[in-house]
Length: 270
Image (cartoon, rainbow, N blue to C red; front, side, top):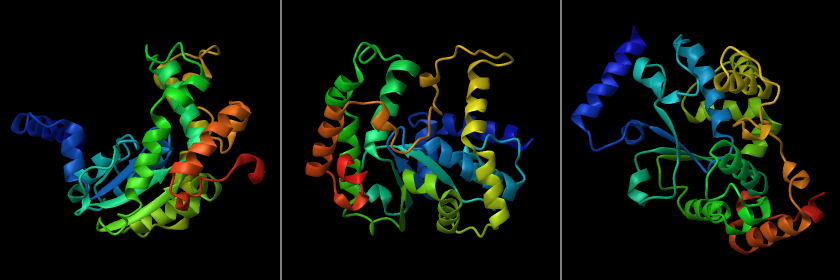
């Protein structure tokens, strides 16, 4: 019943304000924004947060990826919206609480390449090699621009939290607990553990595969086309050449704010 009411509410909102998309309306309503580049672990983070929201609200029929829906149906849940966006006018963030999610661009750019060529089958990139995508694509420039833009604005929103994908992979329960505290929620360790368990790589990949091919199994599915692809830290070393790594790392060293921790050189980091 509650989900039907929510669907009706969204249709009414669309009639009242037809010039705004549903995404924009949800962004405006959100108290908390999770901002990231594509392929930064946003889906995984949303599922973990959504798992917690399910447990706190009892709304088990809502897909945990749709974290903004929980607040519209339960007063216990803060309104959180995850977005991919460039830094906008600073005034757009003053009344928000911001979580900035980042991932090592060496890994993220590879995931984005497979997204464009295997999943989206973008005509612009499908015939391009990974090396060409790294050099000609916009991903690295957009990542650097987003990170550098936020460098001087951590005090602009009501509150600000930086999350690194690598830290979440290494200490998942700790980082999810940190997110819950940022959202103003006191959550037990057992609930956090269960939320993490239900968002495991294996479970998320199985769920995505079933969405692609409902009611059947398909051993020949292209694993690189999946959104939940590898979830590895440092996997770029097996995917791209030393020349590609050198190109990326020189660019990061010259242009990216070092406080994000991605300005290291692979040869020195091993």
